[in-house]
Image 1 (tube, rainbow, N blue to C red):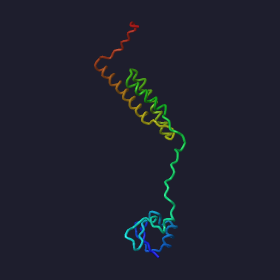
Image 2 (image 1 turned 45 degrees about the vertical axis):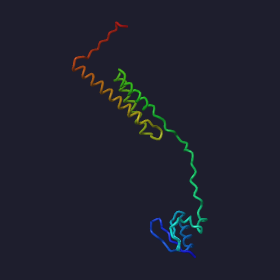
Image 3 (image 1 turned 90 degrees about the vertical axis):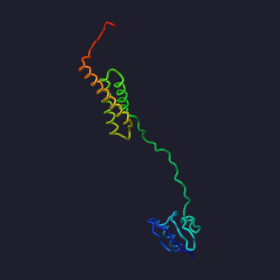
Image 4 (image 1 turned 60 degrees about the horizontal axis):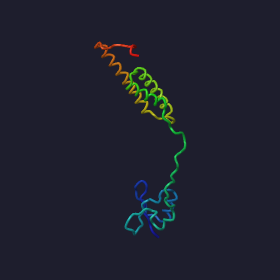
Amino acid sequence: MSMYRIIGADGRQYGPVSGEQLRQWMAEGRANAQTQTFVEGATEWRPLDALPEFAGHFAPQVPPPISPPVSGRVRKTNSYAMAGMIFGILAFFCCCKFLFGALGIIFSLVGLSQINRHPELYEGRGLAIAGLVLSILSLLLALVFIMIALTTGHFHFNWNFNRF
């Protein structure tokens, strides 16, 4: 009758115990297929499932099946965030900086609010933030240009309708 020693989950060595006692520990969950085991008279430690006398006690290790993705709601890009980004770009590159800048700020803030309130439904936080930044920058840039024009005296509203 062989005697066994095992290394427990706590890293401590247990035994020597009989094969019957080891089977009892397996039933209690104290030992499993990967438990390092030393058979008296052997030269090395081996996993418990590598010992022929215990090999039949363990089910073959089969990886869990790959499950398909859970079908649920797919997050969609928030349309207000997208509109805020578009108005931010228009404000930065077009001449109607105040109109597009204000619209960009409003749409971006509404988009961020909806994304924060329902993160499971919406994505597009980056779009809303980019729209907000571009809108604010374009408004600040427009104000700087107006201030420079006013201080230098080069601010003219020259509407020439005769060209039409």
